[in-house]
Length: 272
Image 1 (cartoon, helix red, strand yellow):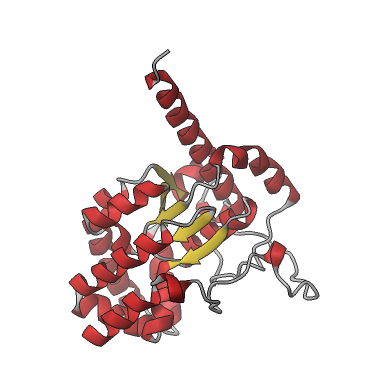
Image 2 (cartoon, rainbow, N blue to C red):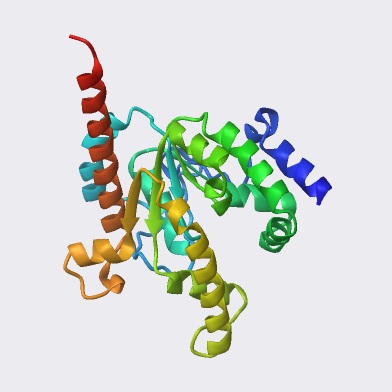
């Protein structure tokens, strides 16, 4: 694993991370591939798969609602933490598109250099110290970027050094029902909860243990946005009625509120 750690650390170096990478997709509004038109989808919060940036086109109404808030952000980077699942990634991507930010995922970057999800999982489980060192190096490089939505892996909250790096911007915990992540895990193995209830139960147990271990660290985020709470606030009977734009609007509202509160505190602390 030492070789893997060196390779991953090198991947985050400025000379490498600045080069094009197929997983670091261009913003759809600035893509050179303008000839290809992607049909609009209903932006469900619970999509069956992870969608691409180009598929997650914000509506005119969403762009209008986020436009005023963007000026308050002043290119402040945004870091998304929480249990990894398609919903979390899709929300982060639509957020980036809505406020005209770049989107990156630290886990995707590591998967690219290590050779996929299984290789990353093996690296993380067999050499947690090395994994956290790589995450720290990556965060040092990525947190220096403005106008960025960074979807973070759990390594971002697993030690005080990495938590401190997230203070360079606004950190947001997207709290999703663990069932969503469990279903994603089973789907990646070609199974589902109905046909393979035992595997679903095992996946839920594993996710619950990890969630319980990390939830206090997730809670160190500047903002917490819960899928279930947003659905409840909007009067929906279940999260199936929630859509991605609902989540993005709530996230932008919370960030705007936080930034204004910080500005007021700074102003109050200045001598007259």
